[in-house]
Image (cartoon, rainbow, N blue to C red):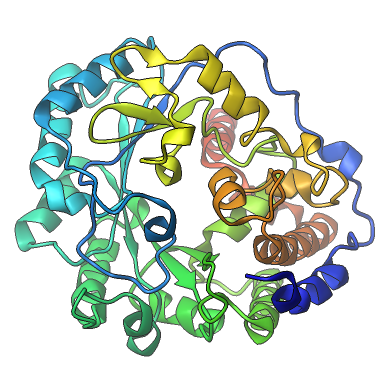
Length: 420
């Protein structure tokens, strides 16, 4: 995407780059990142090494090798051994990068390893998060996920006229009908552990997408702008302005205490950060406490780097290579206060800096964030500030609903103690 073709983004950025009235970044500065070695507790597994769809905006296909092998039982056992060597503490597995349902035997083997090692009440029992395109489920799969305790996320882009434009089979057939059926079923059966992600490509109206997914019973919705090198795929000026209007209208409805709205995940995260929670110098723990693992057991900073040799950080048999890990953390994975384009931005604490993979694979170089991503983040940050500022003045108790789940649990415990 050439600079001259992104002038419309920079025009919008100028309008939202001014902090809202009363905003003080000083009070939202995170704690410094530790220099010591990190305990890895989140493991992203490339179970299948491939996908059964040919989505027209797929960012992974633009950057990752086309041919990757499915994971074997032996590699999964090596990964399990590597995970156990990290020491006692919380652990999570994240299954994606391609379509994990193409390798169902490994999914069941992972669940068997968990069940044979941890009791259901063990506080260190690993959590599993799977992201799938939702096209390969059968009734047994739905039952299994409902019983497994796994967190399930399905990618669905809204109504059929939007979804079927982008999320297609290799023969270019749309997939909405089969996917929406499974979305509705899982939203009913595991509402607290089910979510969806919709990619906003060009001409995707966020209000329509959001309302369609809500009508399927979904309670947690993630909207993300498409990232691609082709201008005809990514959101245009009108799309960004529609997203701004969507966020402003959503904030108005939330202030008015309209009930029944699903949670808009990215926006809710910004709200929590405005209140001072989950603030960090990095957007995620990639290359620190979070690693991606390919089907051969090689280690990478996250899913999005898998198969790109220049980002390899070691393997599960020998661990993270100290030099490679440090090089990533000081370079592509450096914090936002060490990025010239980020350190002066008013919303940096609410953002956490750029996605490392997007910055590296699609950015202009030297760790610069993608302007399109910045526009969406700044729009969300303005809305989050307005919501928190208004509720603080008029109805502060309602802000408790936006606290991170761990804090909410603590608050509920305190409230229960006060009544006994």
